[in-house]
Image 1 (cartoon, rainbow, N blue to C red):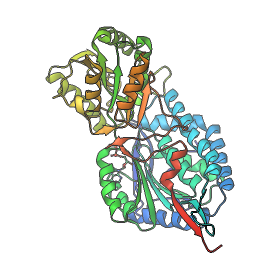
Image 2 (image 1 turned 120 degrees about the horizontal axis):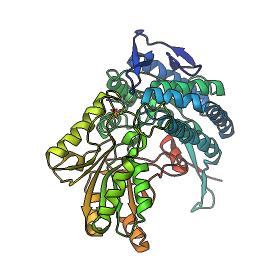
Image 3 (image 1 turned 120 degrees about the vertical axis):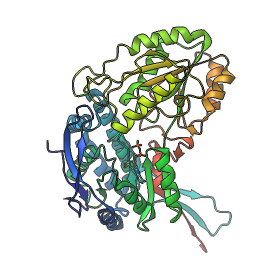
Image 4 (image 1 turned 180 degrees about the vertical axis):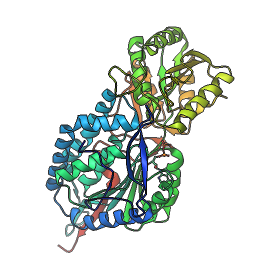
Length: 482
Ligand code: ADP
C-alpha cells in the first residue's frame, strides 16, 4: 500500500534513525508485525526541530489564503484515501474497521475546519482614549509547535493539533505514539502530495524507551515555542514541569473520569443507546468515555437490565472482519490494567452482571464487555479511569447526591446526563465540573466545538475557533503621534 512507510519524515525527506535502529509495530488483534519504523532519538529530534524552525521563517509569512488552500488540498487527499488510512489504523490499533473509518472522517474534518478557519483569524482595532493614536491587535503564530499524541485516536489527535497549528502559521514536530506510528506517516505521505512545504510538518517516530528524552528536548529546546500534548495525566504533568524552564506555551488534553448520570425522568431507550456509544467506542479506550454510571433509584433496575441485554449483543473480535463492535485492547499494559481493576472490584464485593473476564480464544488482549454493580468507594474502578470495556453502575437517590459523586474527582473532562426535566437539565449542566457536557447525548466531539477539560484534565481547547489560540499570540500595536 503506497501509504505505508518504514521511514520517518523530517525536512521533506523519508529517513531512518541516525542509529539505524527500528522498532516493530504490532497488530494487537493477532500479535503479527504490521511494519517497522525508525526508533529515533534526541539527535534525530533535534534535526526535526531545526527543520521546523527553518521552515517557520517562510511559512509564517504565507498568506492565510495560501495556507487554507494547502490544507484543503491535504483534506481532499485524505478523503480520497480514507479507506486505506482506516485499514492501516485497524491493523495497528485494533479498532474495528467501521470505527476506524469513522475516526478518519472525524480526523479529516479538522483539516477541513482549519482550512476554512485560517482565513477567519482576525485582529481588532481598538478605541483609542486619545485622538492621535491608533491601537491594533494582531494574532501571530507562536513558532515551532511540538505535538505529542496518543494511540487511541492515531489520526484525529494529530489533525486536530496540526490543522490548527498550520492554519495559524506554525510549523510542527510530531511525535506519534509508539503503538500507532503508521497512521501518522500515512498522513504525512498525503501532506507531502498536497504540496505542504518541506519542514512544515515533521514526524519523529520512536519507541517508548526514547519518548522521555525526546519529550524533554521538545519541552526545553529554545527553538520550540509550544507543546500540545494528548495523553495520560501522569505524562502531562511531567511535560508541564519541563515546559516551565522556558515558559513554553502548553496545551494539555489529559485523562478524564466522565460521569454518566441517568435521572428517573430519562428516556430509557436513549440513555441505554447513548451508554453503549459513549462507553464502547474504541473498546472503552477514549478519554471522554463514560467511566462512572450513576443511576437514580427508580429507573435503576430497568436501566441495568436493558443495558445487560444490549451489551450481550455486542460482538468482539478481530476488527478487520465485518460486524465486529469491539476489538482488542491496545497492548499488554492496558489489558493488565483492565483485568486488575475488574478483579479488584470483584474481590471487594462488586457483582458481575455480564462479562468480567478475558477472551483468550480470540487473542491475548481481548476483554469481554463488562457490567459491574454494587460498586463501593474503596474499589479502584470507583476512582481510576478504566480505559477499557467496563461499565460500573452506582445507585443514587437525590440530584445533590449525583452531583456530589460526579464532582468528587480531580478530573473534569466530559460529563453526560439524561433527564427530561428542563429545570434539572440547566441546573445539572451548570453544576457539573467538566469542560464538556452531553445532555441526553453520548457522543459530543466535533470539529466545530471546543474540546478540553478543567481541573487535572488539561489546559486549553482544541477544535472550534478556539483551537488556534494555543498556536497564536496576541500582539498589540500602538501607532502614535498621528
Ligand atoms: P498512554 O498511557 O495512553 O500510552 P501516555 O501519556 O503514556 O499515554 O502516552 C501518550 C504519548 O506520550 C505517547 O506518544 C508517548 O510516547 C508519549 N510519552 C510517554 N512518556 C513521555 C515522556 N516522558 N515525555 C514525552 N512524551 C512521552
